[in-house]
Amino acid sequence: MSLHRLLIAAVIGPELARWKAAGHAPAFWWRDDDARRPTPALDRLLALSARFDASITVAAVPDGDIAALVKACRAAPEIELAIHGFRHENRAPPGRPSGEVNDLDRLADVMSDLGAAIEVFRRAGVTPRLFVPPWNNAHPTLKRALGLQGLDLSCYGEMRNGAEPGRLDAHLDVMRWKPQARFRGAVRFLLRARRLLAERRAKGAWDQPLGLLTHHLDHDEPAWRFLEAFLPVAKPVARARLDKPATGNPGHRGVLKAG
Ligand SMILES: [Zn+2]
Image 1: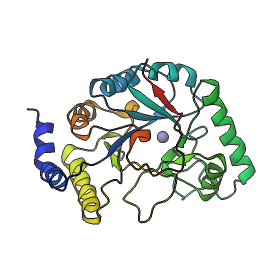
Image 2: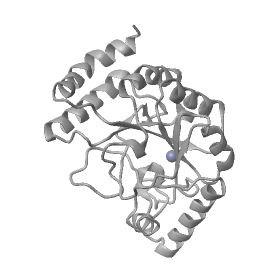
Image 3: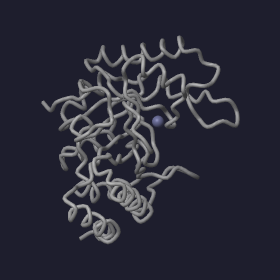
Image 4: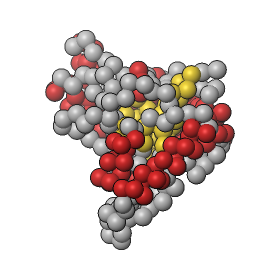
C-alpha cells in the first residue's frame, strides 16, 4: 500500500465510515482548469480519468485550439467542457484580487465577450453549460451576463450557506500556488477534505457536492501520484450525474459521451 493510500485511510477513513453508517456517500465531482489544447499533460489527465472511470469537467480557455481539445476529450469516459474566461487575462486594477472582469466593464461588453466564447465552443461541436472565471473571480457584472446566457457558474471555496441556483464550486485544490505551483501535500489536502466532509455531515447536507480541483499543466509528480491514490476513493461523477446538482439547467449538453 502506498503512503498516500495509508494517509487517505488514516485521515478521512473514519469520516467516510461515519457517512457510510448514516447510509450516505459523499458526492465528489472533478474540475480541471487552464486547458487550451491537447498536450502530454492533458493526455496524462485523460488517462487517469479513463483508468478510474472518473468524469472531469475540463475548463478551457477559448483562445486555445478548442476543436482539437474536444477531439482529444471524446476518447475519455465522460468529459464536460466548460468555458474558462475569455482570454484568461488579469484586468484587475492594482491592489485588487486578480480577475478578468472589473468595475469599469459594461454589461454589454461582457455579454459580447461571453457570446464570442460560447461561439468558439459551438463551432467545435460543444454547447457549453458552465463558466469558470479565471482566478475564481465572479464579478457581479459577469454573474449578470452568465444569468442572461443561462450558464452555470463554478468558483472555488468553502461550503456556501443557502443554495445559489446554477452554481457548483470546487473545494479541494490539489495544488498550492505560493511561492510557486506545487502539490499541496497529502496531509494538508486531506485535513481540508475531512473538515468539509464533517461540515456537510453535521448539517445533513449529504447531497452537497464536493469539488476536486486540478490544474494538469502545473502538476508535479507528487500531485499526479496523489491523484492516483485519491481518485479511486473519491470516485468523482459527471456534473450532470450529481444527485441534486446545484444548477438551474437540466440539459447538460456540454457533456461528451465516450466514443
Ligand atoms: Zn485558470
